[in-house]
Amino acid sequence: MEMRETEQQDRVLNSFSANALTCIRNDVVLFSGLGFRLDCGEVLQIQGPNGSGKTSLLRILCGLALPDDGAILWNEKNIHDHRQDYFKEMSYIGHVNGIKMELTALENLTIAGALAVTNQSISLPDILEKMGLAEHENTPARKLSSGQRRRLALARLLITDTRLWILDEPLTSLDDYGRQLMRDMITAHAAGNGITVLATHDPVDIQRHKITMINL
Image (cartoon, rainbow, N blue to C red; front, side, top):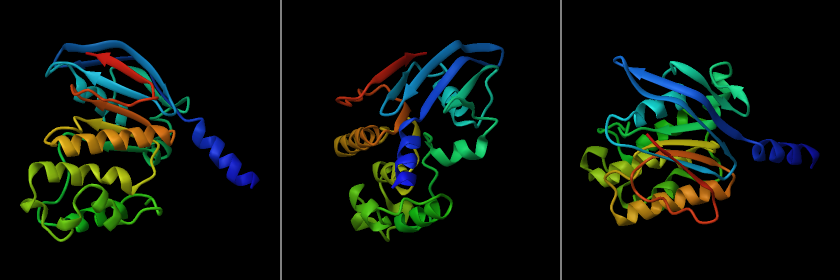
């Protein structure tokens, strides 16, 4: 019991912050002095016109690119000093789906699960059902619609039990059903003390959870 309570406390204390971030691309300053702090159950929505640096910011937050100045902290520790620990707690879904077109929906999720610490509380067929893809379990991804491929990509969020989601335009190509499904997933993630950072122009209705806005 004591060990279980300690683990629960560790999960509750998660925080994600950026301090005075600067990003320069092709001698153009996309943003500078950018900062925020997110605690459990909070959401950060990033908006801005094309070319304003949304994807660059997300890649910096993921640790896939370095800022020209500033630091990103997970649980008050610089992510570049604790990369492995950070990557275990973070899931990134970019604007490119990152799925294998010749593999079936189930095969794509099987590979994704093999590359991560899997959430044992839900099976891959159950994840496909939740994402509205149960009937396409054995369908090659190339035969899915663009919206179904996007849902398949987003299904990777349910495979692992990561505490931080970083999403680049997650609602792109989704119909009304898919958009509501994604909002419900973010709401459930926040309710479970997860943290979400997403770039989107679409409204994100997360009741009872704090949403921070950044306009680049």
